[in-house]
Length: 568
Image 1 (cartoon, rainbow, N blue to C red):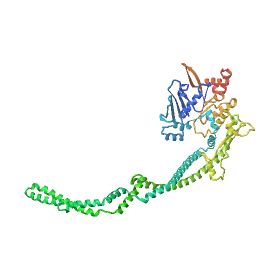
Image 2 (image 1 turned 90 degrees about the vertical axis):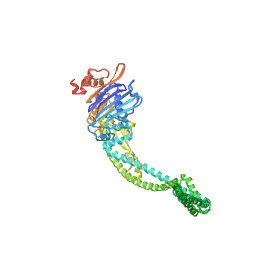
Image 3 (image 1 turned 45 degrees about the vertical axis):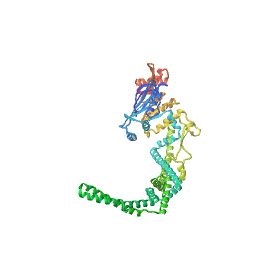
Image 4 (image 1 turned 180 degrees about the vertical axis):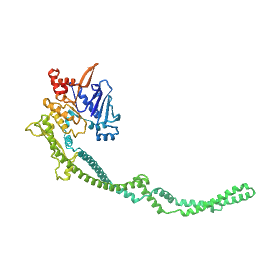
């Protein structure tokens, strides 16, 4: 229940603190006193859209704070746990709006978001006003009401969850089919490209190795000539380097016998002589390894050209070509994998479709059975609200599937809430045919129909607080008295906050609040006070008598209020 409502600098309200109670809380006051502002303030803490125009003139910000008490609500506790909001059966919500357009939200003292407010709203307050009456004119809303009456919310929610999974599964299938089509379209080109690379069959760094070999083959004769000439220079000629070093070494070795300081030089020359001899023999042997083969040169050149063609088309390097080959090959692997995945998804879809059809048929049968009870309950309530000749029917669309329909036809009509589309049909006058409710009912009749539905669903509704705004539109007299009694009865299950202009409704309240507009220090402000028993008599008398309160109106007010007022 909404235990306390605080409003600060909102519209023409400067500071207002309203403490509400269990049962039926009625609010009355002159037209324009600010009753609708209170409804707007409650809407604000339920996540409604805000605007700078809501802020009191000359103020930079406005705030609304609601303090709620919940005796026990497991679903709400689970939601708050999901949102990481501390909760011990009390919920405090504060929303502040700033003139520059910024909003802040705090839930139980922790910063939060408007999205979280919207998720919490269904657990806190249901506002039945002029706007909510329009829900009765929306076909999408009819199934919710029927399901609530028939106790099918859990079944419907379960189906909706499965249907959402079905939609996601179909999207995955479409994506998979699209990828397969794209693979198929590219397959011919990919196969050609892959075969082109496979025909050449490049190896890592093969181009580097071949280019080195090509250079050797192109200059084979030069290499042989260089090796032969330098071998002779170092070793074979009479004036070969090795012969000169040998003679030089012998003389220095002789000198070392005379002066030991020449020994290191003699040793070094010996090493040089040995090294030159090794180099000479290496040059001699190298000549035998040089291949002079024009055919091999042509083959190497052709291979290099083949590799270069691949590099130009597939990445610029051998590594790029090899990566392209791997990518092209993976496309064929992916295609096989995609086809396997598609087969799995199609099997899942078939199984899910079977289950959805089964659940939808169950919902449809239960709804049709529930619709009969709903019709009887609505007509009973409307008779009590002085709409005794009213006939009501919940009609299911002609497009609804029938037993034995083909699976394809059943799936075409499947929606997030099953097969069904419902219409509420009404006839308010004897002899008149049933017509869609949206085409024939007045505002007052809508109010009474809404009250009837709220009364019927009272025990099943999860929301703790219900606000009725303009529920008395278009009614008076005995009808208003019955509406008041209905509200009082509904207050046995929910906390009710009802704004009314009718004394027949106001006198039914367990608590009565007066909304007034006054001017103080040149500024208009709205105030709200809980009436004492004496104050209630005066306010009921005003509602009965209009501008002037007569002794007759006062006496009538006391009589309407009963023993409590009579003792005043």
